[in-house]
Length: 164
Image (cartoon, rainbow, N blue to C red; front, side):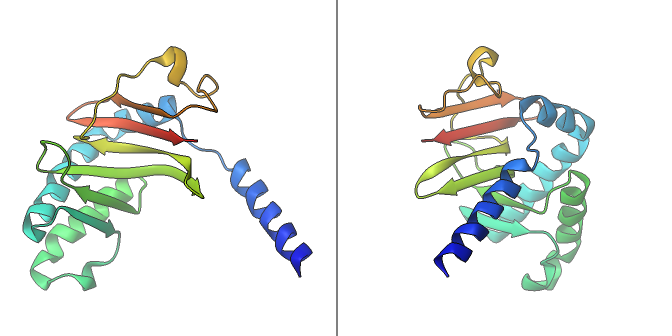
């Protein structure tokens, strides 16, 4: 039984490590191709956050039936915008001085308090300078905590955190 579990875990780790993750350059290109959609997504998502009057809310695509019927047109718009930017969920936040911040995760991997994530972030609470000499894939430290934000446009950033 223990061997089957370990073999299954090894297969999962192998498969997940083989999947390609977009990094800074690819995410920047993706944003540039869809920047109008990202701009619209921020406006619609912040409208939803204001309507829900909350400091944090996770929104998953195609969950309109869980909300009041009067929100259906806004949720339909959000679903379409998320699909247009190739995402299935987002988190609406109120962080720092911004009334509305968004996190649209590109990828994340955490286990036992360690891990990393990369996301599109709208009006992040903390801006940390992006330095390509140390923040590009392959140049990042594997032993130190890393956090950066790379400015895109319209209040959007690429946000990265690695917590060893």
